[in-house]
Every structure is written in C-alpha cells, then in structure tokens.
Amino acid sequence: MAASSLSKSETLFSDHVVVQAAVAAYLGRYRGQTRLHAESDLRVFLHWCARQDLDVLAAVRADIERYVRWLQDEGCYQPSTVSRRLSVVVVFYRVCVIDQILPHPPADYVRRPRVPAESPTLGLGHLQFEALITTARLSTNINDFALVALLGLLGLRIFEACGLNISDLGEEQGHRVLRVRGKGGTVVLVPLPPAVARAVERAVDERESGPLLRNTLGRRLDRHAATRRLKRLAAGAGIRMPRMHPHMLRHTFVTTMLDAGVSLRDVQIAARHADPRTTMRYDRARRNLDRHPNYILAAYMASGT
Image (cartoon, rainbow, N blue to C red; front, side):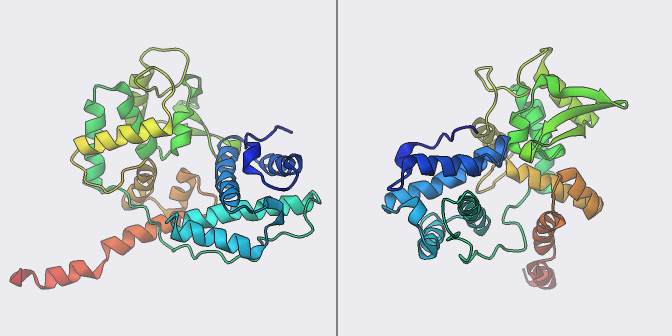
C-alpha cells in the first residue's frame, strides 16, 4: 500500500505509525485526482485537530461537530464544500473501524449541512460565453482558445483538461476524439466538434508529444495558471463577474446545452454526472433566475420607469 504524503506533524498523541497506517488505508480506496482531493480534504481536518491539540483517533462526535462549525463560521465555506469535507472525515473513521483501529465511528451521527437544491455557481450568459470564446480565439496565447473550448464546449473538469496529453488525441469511427481521464480514473472518449478540434490543433502546434495545454514556460498548465488565464480573458471580453473560475465554464456547458433544447438525460450523459440530481441543480439555478418575478414587476411598471 502506498504511503500517505501527510506529514507526521499532522498526527497527534496516538502512535503516528498507527495514524499514518489509517490514513494510508483510507487513501488506498481512491486513485488519481479523486485520491488527491480526498487527501486534501483530510489534511484540512488533521490540521484542525493539530491546532485544537486533539488526538485524531480519540475524537468524539462533539469534536467533529465543532469542526463542522469551524468550516461554516470561520472558513465560510459553501454548504456543498462543508458536506464534502465532512464526508471525507466520516469515511476515514469508518475505515478505521473496518481495520479495527477504533471500536466505533465517531462521525456517523454528525449533523450534515443542508445543501441547496440549486447550484451556487452561476454560468455565463449566451452573449458572455460568445464574447469569451471570441477573445480566446483572438488571443496571442495559443492555449487560450483550447482552454475555453475544452471547458466550455466539451464540459471538461479543470483537472481533466490540464491532464490531457497529445497522445490522448485520436480517431474513432470517423470522429476526432479525446481520451479523457475523469473521476476515479475512469476513461471516456469525447468527440471533438470542428471548432474544438481547431482550438486543440492550434494548441498542439505540430508537436507530437507532451501536454496538450502548456503555460508560458512550456510546461503543463495547472489549474492555478488556468484560472489566471480565464480571469484575464474574461476581463478582455468585458465580462464582469465577482469570481471567475474554471468550474463556471463547466456550468455554462450544462446550462447552454439546456437552453439549446438538449434533454436533461442527454446533458447528464454529456456532463458525465453519475446522479441526475446534479444536473438538475444546474437547471434549477438557471430557471430561478430566468423566471424571477423581478422581471415581471419591472415589465409591469415599465411605463413609470
């Protein structure tokens, strides 16, 4: 079993070998980006335990309730983020019980925050999306057009787009396709529409190997550099958003498909959502704004304004 990269200083009081084994056993359930994200969320909890002088393997339900309140009150995280980080802690302790490190899981009955039915992330409007695509296509950075196309026209997650290699390009049954490594290490073939194919070919720039998306130093583009590029492109396109981030384009991919008349089931398949309720959260956010009664009132009072 691969050893965890979490440091010994992040495990207190209990024999650090036992804690490291517990962490490794938990992380061993996952692969790829899912493992990295689980490790990142678990590290937040272990850091919090260290600051509280709390023995990780002696924590009780009340301690984990305090951790949840800290995420909400001091961390100011969204309910979905709090719920995800709590889930990591819950499963970690369940693995400890399975491996007979603990007699019972202390986090099982911790109250979970209510996650709203609609997604808090807002996608771009149709005109904003067109402006962003045009700005990216005219950019002197050959990676910009491909970045926007992969996120907004294919709906890739940012780690999927940044992890692409030139060798992932291919053909299948007459279609140009990309081999995409998604959550849990799953591999899917995603067809490339002509506009996306042109953007990708521009980024490849006649290279035969290496990462598909590169930063200004010629190395693989990471999510942080990608976020900076998107912010600059959005500013150049005249898009005023309080916080531009890569997931906003995946959200735009879903809502634009729905606006184009694609069925919810087909959008779920295209977005690779395991649960249709995830796709519906995007749809609810869009409809709540489109049908907001403020527009009706403003139209009713148009003669006076």
